[in-house]
Length: 223
Image (cartoon, rainbow, N blue to C red; front, side):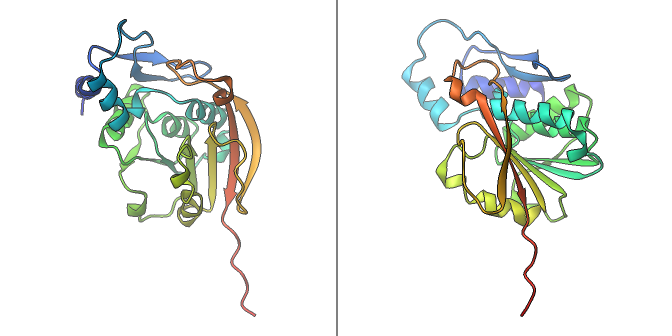
Protein backbone atom coordinates (compact mmCIF):
# COMPACT_ATOMS: atom_id res chain seq x y z
CA UNK A 1 0.00 0.00 0.00
CA UNK A 2 1.42 3.37 -1.04
CA UNK A 3 1.18 6.70 0.78
CA UNK A 4 -1.54 7.61 -1.70
CA UNK A 5 -3.48 4.49 -0.69
CA UNK A 6 -3.03 5.41 2.98
CA UNK A 7 -4.40 8.85 2.17
CA UNK A 8 -7.43 7.29 0.52
CA UNK A 9 -7.97 4.99 3.49
CA UNK A 10 -7.90 7.96 5.86
CA UNK A 11 -10.36 9.92 3.72
CA UNK A 12 -12.80 7.03 3.76
CA UNK A 13 -13.13 7.73 7.48
CA UNK A 14 -12.38 11.46 7.70
CA UNK A 15 -12.92 13.34 4.43
CA UNK A 16 -10.85 16.33 3.34
CA UNK A 17 -7.87 15.83 5.64
CA UNK A 18 -4.32 15.18 4.53
CA UNK A 19 -1.49 12.92 5.57
CA UNK A 20 1.63 15.00 6.07
CA UNK A 21 5.22 13.95 6.63
CA UNK A 22 5.95 15.35 10.10
CA UNK A 23 9.08 15.39 12.27
CA UNK A 24 8.64 14.35 15.90
CA UNK A 25 9.86 16.41 18.82
CA UNK A 26 13.16 15.22 20.30
CA UNK A 27 13.37 12.33 17.85
CA UNK A 28 15.48 11.98 14.69
CA UNK A 29 12.57 10.57 12.70
CA UNK A 30 9.44 11.58 10.85
CA UNK A 31 6.08 9.90 10.27
CA UNK A 32 3.15 10.19 7.90
CA UNK A 33 0.47 11.61 10.21
CA UNK A 34 -2.83 13.44 9.95
CA UNK A 35 -2.51 17.19 9.38
CA UNK A 36 -2.30 19.12 12.67
CA UNK A 37 -5.04 21.60 11.72
CA UNK A 38 -8.28 19.92 10.77
CA UNK A 39 -10.72 21.67 8.41
CA UNK A 40 -13.08 24.08 10.09
CA UNK A 41 -16.68 23.07 10.48
CA UNK A 42 -18.64 20.48 12.42
CA UNK A 43 -18.13 16.82 11.59
CA UNK A 44 -21.42 15.33 10.50
CA UNK A 45 -22.94 12.35 12.28
CA UNK A 46 -21.86 9.87 9.61
CA UNK A 47 -18.20 10.90 9.90
CA UNK A 48 -18.35 10.69 13.69
CA UNK A 49 -19.87 7.20 13.42
CA UNK A 50 -17.05 6.09 11.12
CA UNK A 51 -14.39 7.54 13.42
CA UNK A 52 -15.80 5.58 16.37
CA UNK A 53 -16.29 2.34 14.46
CA UNK A 54 -13.09 2.40 12.41
CA UNK A 55 -10.68 4.63 14.30
CA UNK A 56 -7.50 5.20 12.26
CA UNK A 57 -5.12 4.99 15.24
CA UNK A 58 -2.13 4.97 12.89
CA UNK A 59 -2.61 8.62 11.90
CA UNK A 60 -1.46 9.77 15.35
CA UNK A 61 1.78 9.25 17.23
CA UNK A 62 0.33 8.55 20.66
CA UNK A 63 2.01 9.91 23.78
CA UNK A 64 3.14 6.52 25.10
CA UNK A 65 4.60 5.48 21.75
CA UNK A 66 6.47 8.76 21.45
CA UNK A 67 7.82 8.38 24.98
CA UNK A 68 8.91 4.78 24.37
CA UNK A 69 10.61 5.72 21.10
CA UNK A 70 12.59 8.45 22.87
CA UNK A 71 13.52 6.06 25.65
CA UNK A 72 14.73 3.36 23.26
CA UNK A 73 17.03 5.78 21.45
CA UNK A 74 18.37 6.99 24.79
CA UNK A 75 18.86 3.38 26.00
CA UNK A 76 19.74 1.35 22.88
CA UNK A 77 21.15 -1.48 24.99
CA UNK A 78 17.55 -2.59 25.66
CA UNK A 79 17.16 -3.77 22.06
CA UNK A 80 20.59 -3.66 20.39
CA UNK A 81 21.38 -6.92 18.61
CA UNK A 82 18.08 -8.46 19.67
CA UNK A 83 14.87 -9.65 18.03
CA UNK A 84 12.15 -7.20 19.02
CA UNK A 85 8.37 -7.29 18.60
CA UNK A 86 6.30 -4.10 18.79
CA UNK A 87 2.76 -5.07 19.76
CA UNK A 88 -0.08 -2.76 18.69
CA UNK A 89 2.37 -0.96 16.43
CA UNK A 90 0.00 1.68 15.03
CA UNK A 91 2.15 4.16 13.11
CA UNK A 92 5.23 2.04 13.79
CA UNK A 93 7.09 4.69 15.79
CA UNK A 94 8.30 2.23 18.45
CA UNK A 95 9.33 -0.39 15.89
CA UNK A 96 11.22 2.24 13.91
CA UNK A 97 12.99 3.52 17.02
CA UNK A 98 13.98 -0.05 17.93
CA UNK A 99 15.48 -0.53 14.47
CA UNK A 100 17.33 2.78 14.74
CA UNK A 101 18.62 1.72 18.18
CA UNK A 102 20.29 -1.32 16.61
CA UNK A 103 17.83 -4.18 17.01
CA UNK A 104 18.87 -7.16 14.89
CA UNK A 105 15.31 -7.82 13.79
CA UNK A 106 12.11 -5.83 14.35
CA UNK A 107 8.56 -7.15 13.98
CA UNK A 108 5.67 -4.68 13.90
CA UNK A 109 2.51 -6.46 15.06
CA UNK A 110 -0.96 -5.00 14.57
CA UNK A 111 -4.32 -6.53 13.69
CA UNK A 112 -5.20 -3.58 11.43
CA UNK A 113 -3.84 -4.12 7.90
CA UNK A 114 -3.82 -0.37 7.24
CA UNK A 115 -1.68 0.18 10.34
CA UNK A 116 0.77 -2.40 9.03
CA UNK A 117 0.86 -0.59 5.71
CA UNK A 118 1.58 2.64 7.58
CA UNK A 119 4.40 0.91 9.45
CA UNK A 120 5.94 -0.06 6.13
CA UNK A 121 5.71 3.44 4.68
CA UNK A 122 7.00 5.06 7.87
CA UNK A 123 9.88 2.61 8.12
CA UNK A 124 10.81 3.34 4.51
CA UNK A 125 10.61 7.07 5.23
CA UNK A 126 13.19 6.59 7.99
CA UNK A 127 15.34 4.15 5.99
CA UNK A 128 14.92 1.16 8.28
CA UNK A 129 13.29 -2.22 7.75
CA UNK A 130 10.58 -3.85 9.82
CA UNK A 131 8.74 -7.12 9.38
CA UNK A 132 4.96 -7.26 9.62
CA UNK A 133 2.72 -9.54 11.68
CA UNK A 134 -1.07 -9.35 11.96
CA UNK A 135 -1.50 -11.85 14.80
CA UNK A 136 0.67 -12.18 17.90
CA UNK A 137 -0.20 -15.87 18.10
CA UNK A 138 1.26 -16.42 14.65
CA UNK A 139 4.70 -15.44 15.94
CA UNK A 140 6.44 -18.79 15.62
CA UNK A 141 10.04 -17.73 16.32
CA UNK A 142 11.62 -16.63 19.61
CA UNK A 143 11.52 -12.94 20.51
CA UNK A 144 14.02 -11.39 22.90
CA UNK A 145 12.09 -8.25 23.81
CA UNK A 146 8.41 -7.37 23.41
CA UNK A 147 7.40 -3.70 23.44
CA UNK A 148 3.85 -2.44 23.96
CA UNK A 149 2.89 1.24 24.08
CA UNK A 150 -0.60 2.53 24.79
CA UNK A 151 -2.41 -0.80 24.57
CA UNK A 152 -3.99 -1.01 28.04
CA UNK A 153 -6.65 1.66 27.48
CA UNK A 154 -9.32 -1.06 27.34
CA UNK A 155 -9.79 -3.18 30.47
CA UNK A 156 -10.31 -6.21 28.25
CA UNK A 157 -6.71 -5.90 27.01
CA UNK A 158 -5.16 -6.53 30.43
CA UNK A 159 -4.91 -10.28 29.81
CA UNK A 160 -2.16 -9.50 27.31
CA UNK A 161 0.20 -8.81 30.21
CA UNK A 162 0.37 -12.55 30.81
CA UNK A 163 0.33 -13.40 27.11
CA UNK A 164 3.29 -11.13 26.35
CA UNK A 165 5.51 -13.16 28.67
CA UNK A 166 4.71 -16.30 26.70
CA UNK A 167 6.41 -14.76 23.67
CA UNK A 168 9.37 -12.93 25.21
CA UNK A 169 11.36 -13.23 28.44
CA UNK A 170 11.47 -9.43 28.73
CA UNK A 171 8.58 -7.04 28.14
CA UNK A 172 8.40 -3.26 28.31
CA UNK A 173 5.01 -1.57 28.59
CA UNK A 174 4.46 2.20 28.33
CA UNK A 175 1.03 3.57 29.13
CA UNK A 176 -0.51 6.93 30.00
CA UNK A 177 -4.08 5.72 30.51
CA UNK A 178 -3.46 3.27 33.36
CA UNK A 179 -1.19 4.85 35.93
CA UNK A 180 -0.40 2.06 38.36
CA UNK A 181 -1.53 -1.37 37.29
CA UNK A 182 -0.61 -4.25 39.56
CA UNK A 183 0.87 -7.48 38.21
CA UNK A 184 3.26 -9.88 39.99
CA UNK A 185 5.59 -10.11 36.98
CA UNK A 186 5.74 -6.39 36.14
CA UNK A 187 7.47 -3.58 37.99
CA UNK A 188 7.06 0.14 37.39
CA UNK A 189 10.46 1.61 36.53
CA UNK A 190 9.95 5.29 35.73
CA UNK A 191 7.71 7.94 34.18
CA UNK A 192 8.19 10.36 31.32
CA UNK A 193 6.33 13.42 30.08
CA UNK A 194 5.05 13.19 26.52
CA UNK A 195 2.23 14.24 24.22
CA UNK A 196 0.22 12.80 21.37
CA UNK A 197 1.07 14.30 17.99
CA UNK A 198 -0.73 15.92 16.30
CA UNK A 199 -1.87 17.41 19.58
CA UNK A 200 -5.35 16.26 20.59
CA UNK A 201 -5.49 18.74 23.48
CA UNK A 202 -5.87 15.87 25.92
CA UNK A 203 -5.91 16.30 29.68
CA UNK A 204 -2.46 16.77 31.23
CA UNK A 205 -2.73 13.42 33.00
CA UNK A 206 -2.54 11.61 29.64
CA UNK A 207 0.86 13.15 28.98
CA UNK A 208 2.46 11.38 31.93
CA UNK A 209 3.62 7.99 30.65
CA UNK A 210 4.45 5.16 33.06
CA UNK A 211 6.95 2.45 32.11
CA UNK A 212 6.78 -1.11 33.37
CA UNK A 213 9.28 -3.92 32.93
CA UNK A 214 7.92 -7.43 32.75
CA UNK A 215 10.07 -10.50 33.21
CA UNK A 216 9.13 -14.10 32.69
CA UNK A 217 9.12 -15.89 36.07
CA UNK A 218 11.75 -18.53 36.61
CA UNK A 219 10.44 -22.10 36.34
CA UNK A 220 9.72 -23.71 39.67
CA UNK A 221 11.85 -26.66 40.66
CA UNK A 222 10.05 -29.99 41.05
CA UNK A 223 9.80 -31.22 44.61
